[in-house]
Image (cartoon, rainbow, N blue to C red; front, side, top):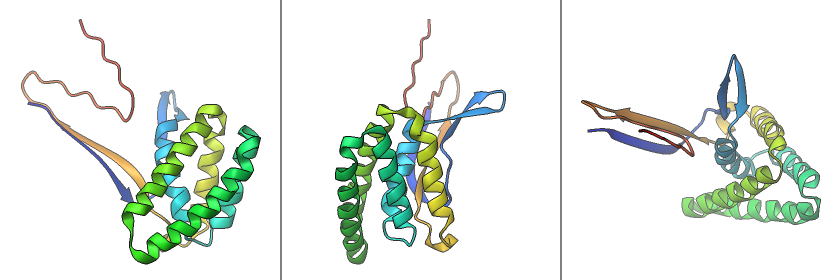
Length: 166
């Protein structure tokens, strides 16, 4: 019998969300980037790297969806105030809601222009790297474990998976 465990947890190490394309070439996995970016943006709001992160994210919005840039700038500042309160009060549920909201926003931004994925990754990596290691916000990592025995098959994917068997 196959056993599949899917775990999405927070770790202190930064995971660069890439998928191998072959021959040493890799491309950005947009969904994994969205997962890490949502947590990282909200996590950086409570650090000294916040202004740099905010400016970088707003710049991306100005390029992809200029009509929403001012709204996003305001939303980032409001979210920062909310996350600071949540952290002070130890409210992890509110923090997770804020992370989910920014994952949703970033997913739509990347859907509108996938070419900004690498720049978003760079902005967040540079902001995190500018902080002392013990102050870097955690980002999610995906770990999948499977065990198959007998004639069982295990198929794992971090996102969409299409299996056609005859």
